[in-house]
Image (cartoon, rainbow, N blue to C red):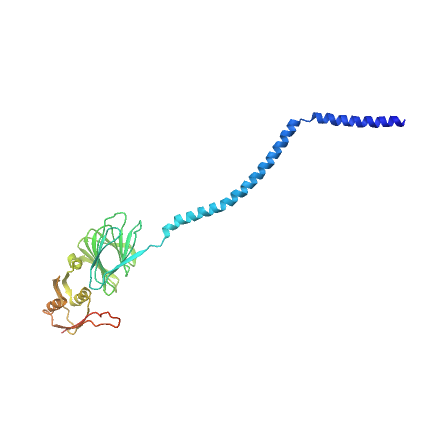
Length: 309
């Protein structure tokens, strides 16, 4: 009996082993190997993708920074501050100068002209203090602007004209010799005053008003040739021009309270010769004080006092 029980248990174990063998034989080892290989490959690919993503993220930071910097430089270059140059005509001198665009300018005694070293793509703009004659190179796409300290702006495209904007003058003058000129007023930039050849524009600084009239242009432009031309000019205005031309301080004491006007042309005459001419039609006397040496070694300007009786 006991022996039979042992034989049954042994038979059961044998059947279990045979069942396991059949199951193992039923497994497709090639398919299992292929699926296992795919799973390993997929896991490895995911690991590489993760690593590459981290590397790409790290590399994108300097790339983005470089792109931003290059873009900033590209657009910032148009905001580089404009560099200016300034030319000055010393008292008693006249200078001729060529601007970057080829335009020619004559500066009268004691005048200053400020201009950009390189003109922009939109316009050519200069700032004048004093008097200058302009021979502007024609460029219909780039207007030429002359700004004055009082806000009067003259602009052209290519022409010949004179601007007188000395600070101690009661008027600002623009005289057109050739071409066309447009003038912008300081209090009304939308309105333009146009000049034709032979016309003059005269702006009164005190009243803020202006006049436009026909003029003898040579009277206003001959100074660039070293000439002084007066046409029905007041003695007070003549004295002021002589002071600049000869670089002397002239004081006029008009004791008679009369108004004297002159018509004359001077080219190579000395100041004494001119004063002699003026005294022929008016009772005037003058006294000259010669230059004196200053503590710094320089010489003071000569002084002339004119008494008109």
